[in-house]
Image 1: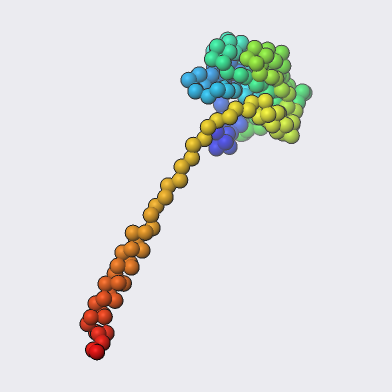
Image 2 (image 1 turned 180 degrees about the vertical axis):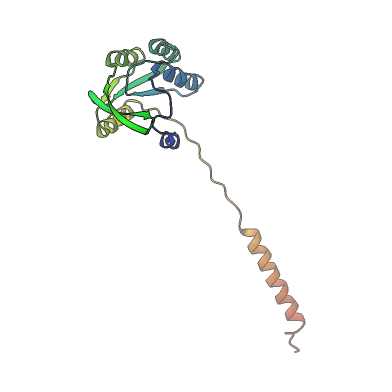
Amino acid sequence: LKRQLKETKSGELEDGTAIGMGLATAVDRLKKSPAKSKVVILLTDGVNNSGLIDPLTATDIAKKFDITVYTIGVGSKGTAPYPVQTPYGKSFRQKEVKIDDELLTKMADQTGGQYFRATNNEKLQEIYKEINQLEKTKIEVSSFKRYSEKFLSFAIIASIILGIELLLRYTLLRTIP
Protein backbone atom coordinates (compact mmCIF):
# COMPACT_ATOMS: atom_id res chain seq x y z
CA LEU A 1 0.00 0.00 0.00
CA LYS A 2 2.81 2.40 0.90
CA ARG A 3 4.53 1.69 -2.42
CA GLN A 4 1.31 2.31 -4.33
CA LEU A 5 0.73 5.59 -2.50
CA LYS A 6 4.28 6.74 -3.31
CA GLU A 7 3.75 5.94 -6.99
CA THR A 8 0.47 7.88 -7.17
CA LYS A 9 0.80 11.27 -8.82
CA SER A 10 -1.43 14.29 -8.51
CA GLY A 11 -3.84 14.60 -11.41
CA GLU A 12 -3.58 10.92 -12.40
CA LEU A 13 -7.24 10.24 -11.74
CA GLU A 14 -10.19 12.18 -13.02
CA ASP A 15 -11.33 15.07 -10.86
CA GLY A 16 -13.83 14.27 -8.15
CA THR A 17 -14.28 12.65 -4.80
CA ALA A 18 -16.17 9.35 -4.78
CA ILE A 19 -16.47 8.67 -1.05
CA GLY A 20 -19.20 6.05 -1.50
CA MET A 21 -17.22 4.16 -4.15
CA GLY A 22 -14.08 4.21 -2.02
CA LEU A 23 -15.88 2.86 1.03
CA ALA A 24 -17.76 0.25 -1.00
CA THR A 25 -14.48 -1.00 -2.48
CA ALA A 26 -12.93 -1.25 0.99
CA VAL A 27 -15.98 -3.12 2.32
CA ASP A 28 -15.82 -5.52 -0.62
CA ARG A 29 -12.23 -6.37 0.30
CA LEU A 30 -12.93 -6.76 4.02
CA LYS A 31 -16.32 -8.48 4.05
CA LYS A 32 -14.93 -12.03 3.93
CA SER A 33 -12.05 -11.36 6.30
CA PRO A 34 -11.98 -13.66 9.34
CA ALA A 35 -10.50 -10.85 11.47
CA LYS A 36 -12.32 -9.99 14.69
CA SER A 37 -11.88 -6.27 14.11
CA LYS A 38 -12.51 -4.92 10.61
CA VAL A 39 -11.67 -1.26 10.20
CA VAL A 40 -11.67 1.21 7.31
CA ILE A 41 -9.91 4.55 7.63
CA LEU A 42 -11.53 6.88 5.11
CA LEU A 43 -9.27 9.82 4.32
CA THR A 44 -10.79 12.57 2.17
CA ASP A 45 -10.05 16.14 1.19
CA GLY A 46 -13.41 17.01 -0.31
CA VAL A 47 -17.12 16.47 -0.63
CA ASN A 48 -18.68 13.52 -2.43
CA ASN A 49 -19.20 14.74 -5.98
CA SER A 50 -18.72 11.65 -8.14
CA GLY A 51 -19.13 7.90 -8.10
CA LEU A 52 -22.09 5.59 -8.50
CA ILE A 53 -22.64 4.67 -4.83
CA ASP A 54 -23.99 7.10 -2.26
CA PRO A 55 -21.74 7.37 0.83
CA LEU A 56 -24.59 6.56 3.23
CA THR A 57 -25.51 3.47 1.21
CA ALA A 58 -21.89 2.33 1.43
CA THR A 59 -22.01 3.07 5.17
CA ASP A 60 -25.07 0.84 5.57
CA ILE A 61 -23.24 -1.95 3.76
CA ALA A 62 -20.20 -1.50 6.03
CA LYS A 63 -22.47 -1.68 9.08
CA LYS A 64 -24.07 -4.88 7.75
CA PHE A 65 -20.63 -6.54 7.61
CA ASP A 66 -19.60 -5.20 11.06
CA ILE A 67 -16.94 -2.91 9.64
CA THR A 68 -16.01 0.14 11.68
CA VAL A 69 -15.35 3.28 9.64
CA TYR A 70 -13.09 6.05 10.93
CA THR A 71 -13.37 9.14 8.76
CA ILE A 72 -10.70 11.82 8.48
CA GLY A 73 -11.26 15.14 6.76
CA VAL A 74 -7.92 16.49 5.56
CA GLY A 75 -7.04 20.07 4.73
CA SER A 76 -7.52 23.53 6.08
CA LYS A 77 -10.50 25.71 5.39
CA GLY A 78 -10.06 28.29 2.67
CA THR A 79 -8.24 27.77 -0.61
CA ALA A 80 -5.52 25.38 -1.71
CA PRO A 81 -3.42 24.99 -4.88
CA TYR A 82 -5.08 22.68 -7.40
CA PRO A 83 -3.35 21.28 -10.53
CA VAL A 84 -4.91 22.32 -13.84
CA GLN A 85 -3.79 21.16 -17.29
CA THR A 86 -3.34 24.09 -19.68
CA PRO A 87 -2.05 24.24 -23.28
CA TYR A 88 1.30 25.33 -21.79
CA GLY A 89 1.53 22.44 -19.32
CA LYS A 90 0.37 21.91 -15.79
CA SER A 91 -0.24 24.93 -13.59
CA PHE A 92 -1.77 25.43 -10.18
CA ARG A 93 -4.80 27.56 -9.35
CA GLN A 94 -6.35 28.30 -6.01
CA LYS A 95 -9.53 26.35 -5.36
CA GLU A 96 -11.96 26.47 -2.45
CA VAL A 97 -11.50 23.56 -0.03
CA LYS A 98 -14.81 22.03 1.03
CA ILE A 99 -15.10 19.08 3.37
CA ASP A 100 -18.48 17.61 4.27
CA ASP A 101 -17.93 17.32 8.03
CA GLU A 102 -21.59 16.45 8.64
CA LEU A 103 -21.58 13.49 6.22
CA LEU A 104 -18.24 12.17 7.51
CA THR A 105 -19.46 12.39 11.12
CA LYS A 106 -22.67 10.55 10.22
CA MET A 107 -20.74 7.79 8.42
CA ALA A 108 -18.42 7.25 11.38
CA ASP A 109 -21.23 7.33 13.95
CA GLN A 110 -23.38 4.79 12.08
CA THR A 111 -20.57 2.22 12.07
CA GLY A 112 -19.25 2.80 15.59
CA GLY A 113 -16.28 4.80 14.37
CA GLN A 114 -15.26 8.39 14.90
CA TYR A 115 -14.73 11.48 12.73
CA PHE A 116 -11.45 13.37 12.88
CA ARG A 117 -10.26 16.59 11.27
CA ALA A 118 -6.61 16.94 10.24
CA THR A 119 -5.34 20.37 9.25
CA ASN A 120 -1.64 19.42 9.04
CA ASN A 121 0.68 16.41 8.98
CA GLU A 122 1.31 16.44 12.73
CA LYS A 123 -2.41 16.36 13.46
CA LEU A 124 -2.82 13.47 11.00
CA GLN A 125 -0.09 11.50 12.80
CA GLU A 126 -1.87 12.11 16.13
CA ILE A 127 -5.14 10.87 14.64
CA TYR A 128 -3.50 7.67 13.40
CA LYS A 129 -2.02 7.08 16.86
CA GLU A 130 -5.43 7.64 18.46
CA ILE A 131 -7.12 5.19 16.06
CA ASN A 132 -4.36 2.69 16.79
CA GLN A 133 -5.14 2.99 20.52
CA LEU A 134 -8.87 2.57 19.89
CA GLU A 135 -8.48 -0.55 17.74
CA LYS A 136 -6.51 -3.15 19.66
CA THR A 137 -7.01 -6.76 18.67
CA LYS A 138 -4.86 -9.64 19.80
CA ILE A 139 -3.92 -11.87 16.97
CA GLU A 140 -2.17 -15.20 17.12
CA VAL A 141 1.09 -15.13 15.26
CA SER A 142 2.73 -18.40 14.45
CA SER A 143 6.38 -18.40 13.59
CA PHE A 144 8.72 -21.13 12.61
CA LYS A 145 12.44 -21.44 12.07
CA ARG A 146 13.91 -23.47 9.30
CA TYR A 147 17.07 -25.25 10.31
CA SER A 148 19.51 -26.68 7.83
CA GLU A 149 21.90 -29.34 9.01
CA LYS A 150 25.55 -28.53 8.45
CA PHE A 151 26.68 -31.91 9.82
CA LEU A 152 26.77 -33.77 6.51
CA SER A 153 29.37 -31.57 4.84
CA PHE A 154 31.66 -31.74 7.90
CA ALA A 155 31.18 -35.53 8.15
CA ILE A 156 32.19 -35.98 4.50
CA ILE A 157 35.29 -33.82 4.94
CA ALA A 158 36.24 -35.68 8.12
CA SER A 159 35.75 -39.05 6.37
CA ILE A 160 37.99 -37.99 3.49
CA ILE A 161 40.71 -36.79 5.86
CA LEU A 162 40.44 -40.02 7.88
CA GLY A 163 40.69 -42.04 4.67
CA ILE A 164 43.80 -40.13 3.58
CA GLU A 165 45.32 -40.63 7.03
CA LEU A 166 44.71 -44.39 6.90
CA LEU A 167 46.06 -44.61 3.36
CA LEU A 168 49.22 -42.75 4.29
CA ARG A 169 49.66 -44.73 7.53
CA TYR A 170 49.72 -48.07 5.77
CA THR A 171 51.65 -46.97 2.66
CA LEU A 172 54.09 -44.04 2.57
CA LEU A 173 54.30 -43.26 6.26
CA ARG A 174 54.35 -46.83 7.39
CA THR A 175 56.78 -47.49 10.20
CA ILE A 176 58.61 -50.74 10.35
CA PRO A 177 59.10 -52.09 13.86
